[in-house]
Figure 1 (tube, rainbow, N blue to C red):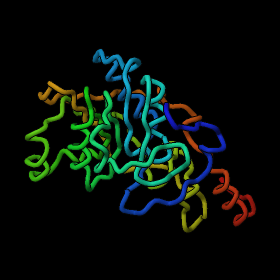
Figure 2: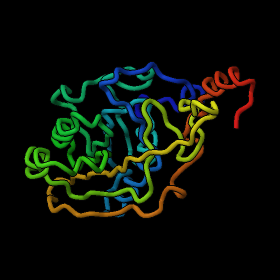
Figure 3: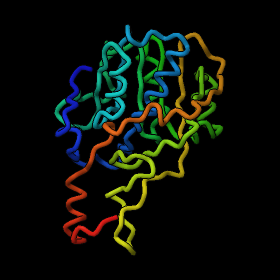
Length: 242
């Protein structure tokens, strides 16, 4: 993967907080692998293709993509770290393309990101979003009627996405403390997610489910340990946690 540093020290450091308008909700790496496995099942030769991840944040999507694709370009409009490119995807130079574009864009301007992704992907586009993206007459008329996805891949298991941090589902979240006990709450989400997949030349939308894949595709090394945050909590509680 071009421009990515996967050292433990880099992965454990908190990045500067991006503007709220960027809606930074890091992607669970196992969900990215589930999409790649689905594409391989369709016969896509990912290992010989390149990929562009234009909303890369701290690289939680780009790193698993690098396990599957020949080359991954990771960019973002905000500087999350020193090892990714800076690019406003919605205003990207006209000569920037990739075989596949993968992204988890902010929800509100998602329609614009999708339109741009379709223009920049030579083979296909994968967009992980709340399943609520499929609802709404205006969105249907402005996007899906003209550009129906090839697949709506529903994650059978809940993909926990939290603002500004990546925590394993049901693990203690050191950034979300119970106000009564001071103990970290378990990471969870009431929001369901899907991956919409566009493959050029295939416009008959098909619904698919991932099945139970999280245990197979999840790795403990995917998650930062946020040691500084845990140390901060311990200093306030005398180490009496959990």
